[in-house]
Length: 198
Figure 1 (tube, one colour):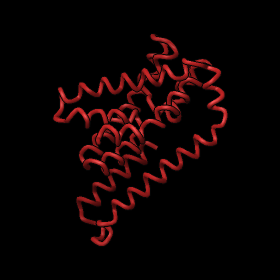
Figure 2 (figure 1 turned 90 degrees about the horizontal axis):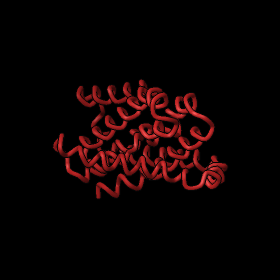
Figure 3 (figure 1 turned 135 degrees about the horizontal axis):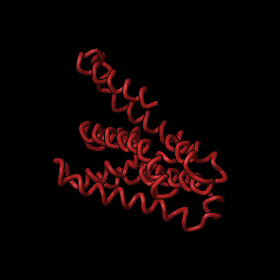
């Protein structure tokens, strides 16, 4: 999947640079993007809607089910506030990029529409690197820190792409918490990114 995404971005960059896109299509690109975002969010809604047991499982786990994603969200956003110290970006923009929580496909497109292509590209790359770094870190964190700490780096991806890796190094409770963590953080992304960018 990551290779498909990188190849798609590369193809778009080349097509734009080489001016291969017909002029009549360019004014409609925003509509295509809006439709794509709506379709993506709808698909996530369908997936969540089909997970009928998730609410019952969250209730059974109690406060632990909410504390982990709350801590991951708070830690991510606090860490994002350090970005303006190192790169020329405002605090609102840094928070909006961080609020992607690893969901690069949505956060990148949202920020491209709501702010600029540059910020959208930054969100895309930041959240892709978060996922890649999570894949590298999860085995080490599982070995040295325990089953719950290794969930944090994955952010929203613990619902899908990093879930099999977490399952391999965790027990049933850890796997369930990872899924709930990704589930709740994914719900927050479409609300927090526009909220922070204003």
